[in-house]
Image (cartoon, rainbow, N blue to C red):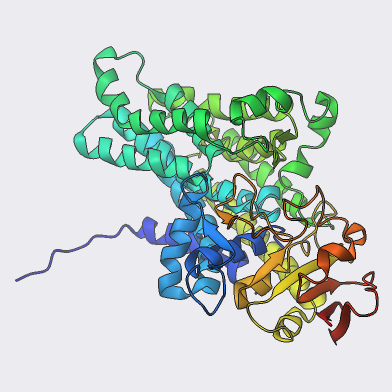
Length: 505
């Protein structure tokens, strides 16, 4: 019996190699300077090991995956953890995001009739401000969104049962990746919908019915975006409609909310180079026949909406921070399909230039991540090793700054979560207990003061009273100097150059 032959396009192998190169920042260091990454690493540990007595989670925590829009990120991570272990699964999730961006963008470009080589431009844009803030479910939603829109374009052009099922699945996956990419997906479907062919409307719209039902559930019953529990629409009306800054200031801050991630601004220079290549691409394509589908004319709606949202929405939506600012990144990403790739030798020239900028940008990111690991992380692993497993640990970060990352970031703010990822127990500060988070406390198990911590607890360790720390916590993990506990409460159990472990007396 002859096995069926599998034909692989040489170009597909080239894009796979590009995706692998794009993942380098995810695995180049053990502790990437992504501000909320330790949160997500610890949360995946709790979800995966909730009932494992080696970590001691079950008496304190419970999973609440139904009421979070971050379900897909943790579901995929949990599945990977069964094969790779939790630590490598967290790295794999970063790889999935970075590697999937050019692949999903290429699929969308092919569906729109654009040259898929334009997907190269997505790679340098993937290491952006929101990624470095560690808003991982948010950025993870973008390759899912681009894949979903590619499926939508194909289904709208030629509706079949198979394409409808694919689109329906992508619609649900996009919703559970993150609600903001899902909202852009919905707008993209409206912009690309075959409005001029009414006979296709029922078949084209049918796969999106599950998405509409999920939107109704989220609108009426989700706790995301609000502390009071009154729903996201009420929170939007209350404090989400005032711009986060006047229009002139918001325009000046575009790099700060999109591409400026390192203190030396080296990544900005690479992004300027990418912009020059994009300009060259559009210029050299002048006069070439455009093979894009007519439906591609509506694509401009997505970057336009992102720009308007960036300029008009507020800084907070309930307990969700950086709300309007988040739209700067998708504005850049959704602009990629508006580019044109020239044909022939001119196209090869642009492709080579784009690859050179992509490789240089990726090397630059890796160099800065390695510098952060070698010069600033310090003896964190030794500090964690000095603490027994399944204990209660408070993290007090006095030395917050980084000389590698932009001063907008505080990459050490949540490093205490690495203890929970490795050894279990309870840590503070954590998002556990917040309405949108997939992990909640068991009744009566909130750490002191017995409710959610006060606003900016983690940012102001000098204001944390000893009564919240002693006698509840077994250890205090401090970075920098500033913790001076009264006699009879905590004693210094371990000290390194940057980290100190205080043990309860």
